[in-house]
Amino acid sequence: MEQLLFNYWAVILEFLFELGVFCALCSARLNRRANFWGRLAVSMLALLLACFAVAGFYTRFGDSVPGRIFVYVLLFLLAFGVGLTVFDEPVWTVLFCVSAAYAAQNLVYKLYLIQYFFGKLLGIYSFPDTVMGKVEYRVMYYTVFALFAAAVYVLFIRRMRDKLTRDKLNSAVLTVAVIILAVSVILCSIEDILFERAGMSVLVGTARPTLLFALRQASSAVSAVCGVAILLFLSRTLEKRNLQREVGQLQHTIRQSEQQYKISRDTVDMINIKCHDMKYKLDAAILGSGVSADAFADLRRSIAIYDSVIETGNPLLDVLFTEKSLYCESHGITLSCMVDGGLLSFIEDGDLYCMFGNIVDNALEAVMGIREREKRVINVVVKSREGMALVQVENYFTGLLRGEDGEPVTTKDDKNYHGFGLRSIRAIVRKYGGEMSVDAQGDVFSLTLLFPTVD
View 1: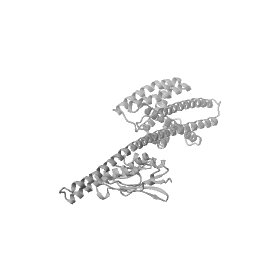
View 2: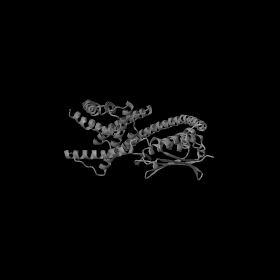
View 3: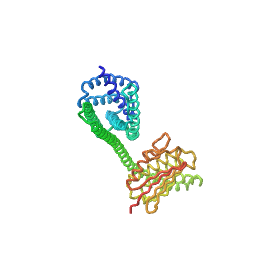
View 4: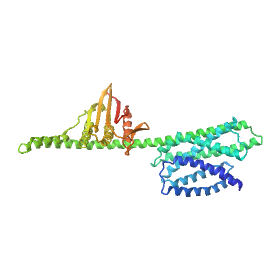
């Protein structure tokens, strides 16, 4: 009974506590189920009771590799069950978090063993076999554990946690999670059993302590390297998944832009034809009417707004800027275009429409929140500079800009401004070998694109 209680407190619960710390860090951004804290309390109580049975199995069979493997798999599954109970996420997302937490716990523990054995070798650690000595050891253990855990969080978990969204994880990620579980459990179990037996050999004089120390350090180092590799692989897997999602969104946006261009082109052409006909009909009607010259001139100016086509030398940009200018005119915004569209003829229509559509829409969203009429201005320039095509866009904005992954974003409630739009612009620019830079001076936002021209 005494051995059972010792294994329960010193082995099972301590492992679950450490695993729980990393599970909490990995799952901090997950969606919680209703009555989260109540579910968590009941789950933890059930977990504590279940661990008595695990401790009993550990006491009886824990000195063998299969027994040790079974215990750690069972503890993993129990933690996984708690995650499913308290988080409103797909099964694979919870499995991914618990697997990452398991890999992180194993890494930190191996790092602790490495420093502890070197500390003993150098005489840094020397704890007497007394109650106070045991307390001092536990204080040292958790202090070092906390430091290594903080480092692992900063280097690995924080990046993964921020990328782990509610989007369904694919089978590749699930496979990675299962591999992590299998490799970590098997290696740790074999290592623990072998070195426990080797330690007994030292006590009876059949093995050399120096050799055992070297082997133990080498084994811990290998396990630590495996832990780092696993966490890096997990992080890269999430980055790849997020990149694929962004590429899919960009491709969808470009396809929508192509359709929008066709619709806008037909709409602008129809409006111009109608307005052109209306001017001639008005000229004919005015001759026999009593309408004053001033009223007639005002009416012609109103119609002329819809009969003004911005000419850039690129039919697609003509349609886009004409359409945007109509919107700006009706909202009290000045859109100034000095655009040599021929310089950008090497860009495919879908990409070109998507790029400038995002550029102008971002600028429109910014100036719409400005009350001063003189600041409701958007300047767009496309010109040649030193054999390259230069695109410059400037507009006023309200709010503060702060860096986020190299991209400026607004602190307004609407986070779409300068968000995915800028990332899609940058992706298109890089597709054609160009460079993009952004700058904010005072209340003026500037976007600069530079393309190598194609002869």
